[in-house]
Length: 311
Figure 1 (tube, rainbow, N blue to C red):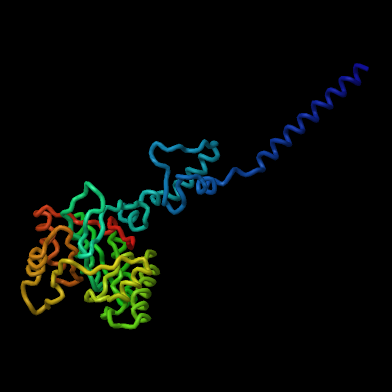
Figure 2 (cartoon, one colour):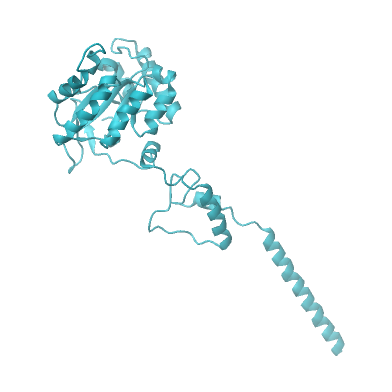
């Protein structure tokens, strides 16, 4: 009887041991959770496109050693994508600029909140993109003075040189709509005005991934139809309130850069919406102009801080 009892006990131990080993085998066969999926769905976590990240002081989900290892590999794969330069972040919309200004009926830029300076100017450049040399010359100077501007472009020029539009966007400047063909819109049929505006919207978005939110009609002549279609497309319609007259000059005349500076300063006032163009003498004049504006206490409004909601 004792032998039978001992034999039964031994059999039970063998069976339990076998069950335990099988359980361990099954556990190893189950793959660890995919780290990318866990972090993609976790609010505030870093995704593969680097558009968000855990903020300082934020919580991080608990993880096993296997998860930590996978996360280390994932971090190495994504290294650099979560720490883009500021200009790239702003262009992609990751870092929003606070809206603090609006445009009034005279096309001046004025504060929309308390506590911000009234002594500002908006810098704009029309009729591009033409040449990389001029674009880089303008933006080099803007960067030197920590300034932003709107580059109002024509659709046909974008079609000819999409790489130049990408250059403007990649260097952190704002792109505006200046119609497709640079024609006077106010007396054109509605269908033509719509094509001029909407085709430009489409090609800019297709080229740089973001449609413009500012529209300036050629010669400032959009008419009621231009205003209507701009509004339908979510565009803030503007002309200007301070013209540099750089478009009246030619390469045959001398002293153009000095004339650009003096023309702007003669009309200078708080909120000036300054019209300039992608022209050689404007590139030459810009550093002197911005230096003089700063010496008079003016700062340069970021176009992204302007309220574009149509009232």
